[in-house]
Image (cartoon, rainbow, N blue to C red; front, side, top):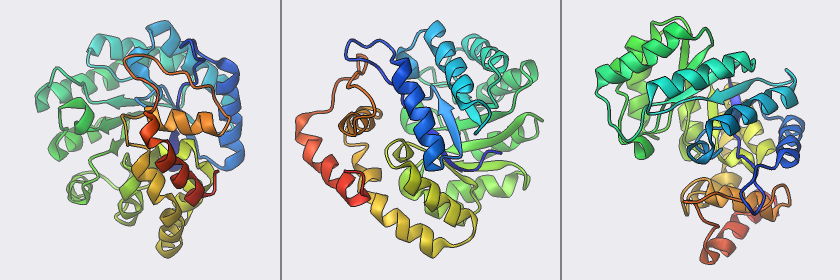
Length: 291
């Protein structure tokens, strides 16, 4: 159920920062038409840190309703507060999301035992499939392979989004977990390499703006045709790079606005993309054939 191209969906906003439900519905329909395999609602790319609890749950509910079981919906429900993560994960279950994505608790820098206890509690308390998310560049904590292995023994922890971009890390995890444990890339730039080493796809930022190409790339990789996957990926390399010229999701929201798919809204402390990066991103868009 959870493989291939899974988009880390932006949360569309009007220029005053209010949520744009019509644009969100348009994005969901576009992704389904373009071949995206799953939607990830309200992750970091969805600006989860600046959505309040009610908004967070409403985005999840609406994406589930809009998708209407045509493709799976994975709800971002992680937090550095275990109590808040529990509330969000319970809400995602009630909203009938297909799974939850739980980022390692950020900023407060728990120990490996703290990471284990945090995720074990959520797995024990909420009967929904749960995907771990390791992104130390944002969280300032690194979930080590030994901890992943311990958590993989819990029935409803089904996989991990590993975003270090380190292939040795993937090998270390793979050696410690069962064959049915999902290994998903969280790094667009290395996703093809990740799949070649046994990954089942990626949760992608680039898929926000080039969904058909990312879906085709992932499909080729899952079919074992890595020559085709790399050929497709060549067109995406400038996007993989330039979508991080400023902090995600600043660049990806700018590109979507350039494409006419969303308004230019983004919430402080994030600010609109600096003008000096506009032409570089337009060049990347042209290379990918989306401009």
